[in-house]
Length: 317
Image 1: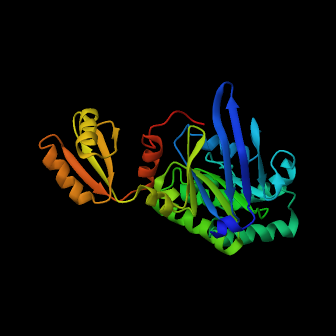
Image 2 (image 1 turned 180 degrees about the vertical axis):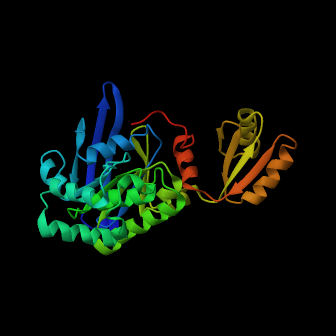
Image 3 (image 1 turned 30 degrees about the horizontal axis):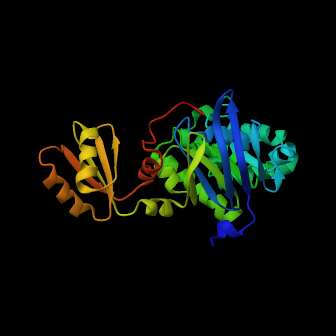
C-alpha cells in the first residue's frame, strides 16, 4: 500500500456532482489526496476540471455530493477552510500598477496580517522565491514567470496547508515552467504543502505524484504517471493513411488487433512494435503513407480511455 493510501487525506470528495441547468459538468467525482502530494487533474477544456477547481476553492457550491479538505467540511466550514488554503487562478490576480511588495502587503491585510509579522513574512517569501531584488519593481514590468512567482508567494502569505493552482504553466516559457516546478517540489518537500493543480499539458501532468484524468465530468483514470502508462503496455504504432476508417477495420480483422482511428491516423497498441510494423507493411503494401513507433504517453492513456485526443475540446467547464 502506498503512502498516499496510508496517510490521513488532505482532501477527499465523495460523489461530487455539479449541474449547469440540465447539463452535468461534474459527475459523481470521488477523490482522495494525501498530505504532501502533488496531485494533477488532467483533462481537456470542457472536461470538468475547472468546475471541480471552483468547487474546491469554495467559489461554487456543488449540486450534490460532499468534500472534506484538511479535515473541514467544504460546505459547513467554508470560512475556516479559506484561511487554510491558498489559491492561484489561471487569470492573473496581481495589481500590475502596484509594486511587488505592495501586492503582498495588500494580500496580507486581507488575512489580518500587519506590522512586523507581515513584514517578516513578506521578506521570507521574497527570499524564498528569489524576488528580493524585484520587491520595488512594478508588477507590469516583470516577465510572465516572475509574475507567476509573485502570484504563488501571495497565495502562501498565510501559510496554507493546501495550494490549489489552475493551469499554473499557462503563458510561461520553458525556463519559467522549470522554475515553477522547482518551487512546487520545494513547497512539498520542505514545507509539507499539499498541491492540487489542473492542467491540459501532458508534460505538466507527468511531473505530478499522481494524476486523475477527467473527461465529460467523470474521472476515467487515476494513478501515478508511470502506472497509467503501464496500463497501455508495449508500444504504440501510428499509421497515417488517406482512408483511416477503412484501413483500421481491415487491420483489426486481418491482424486481429484492437485499433483506434483518429482522423487520418490508425493507432495500435502492441507488445512487439517493430515486428508488428513489419507485418503491417507486408499485409497492406502501398496503403500506408507513414508509420511511427513510440512508447506510451499520458496522451495514449487519454486516447485509450476516451477514444479521442486531449486537444479535442468541448468548451470551458
